[in-house]
Image (cartoon, rainbow, N blue to C red; front, side, top):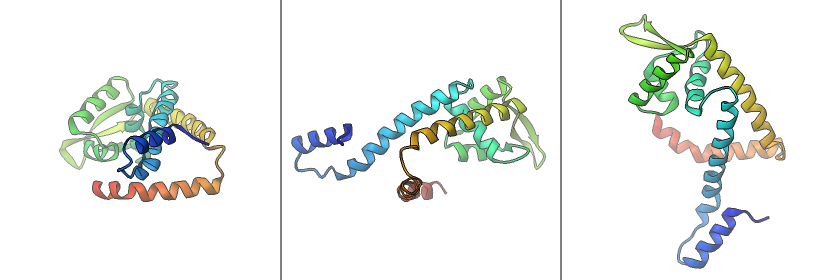
Length: 165
């Protein structure tokens, strides 16, 4: 069954037969899938009054475990944004009552960003809905094929993750 990427590749092969467009067979599909997933995630989060970036910060804090707090530096590493962007995001989440800034007991000059009860409730509900939606998206693919796809994507992403560390 042909898809949009097949049609794009066919056009490139016709117009530029000198180019090997084989990498696009995989990566164009990954790129298109990422755009579709971003839209689907945004819709799932919108139901809970969250934007995607808000979910990312709240989820990083939730994954940290009780008491659900991280330094701004660790939040930067978890969410892959700049310091200025993180400051703005924490300010906005604080104004919404989803996180709070606390003094860092290990560093008098530092602060910790902590999830509030409202923030935990919001991220927990959004996560549950997101997983329901993602299960629906994968329903037509067997568990074995899902595991194989996950393995292959892990191999594709690994070099980027190694750059980060």
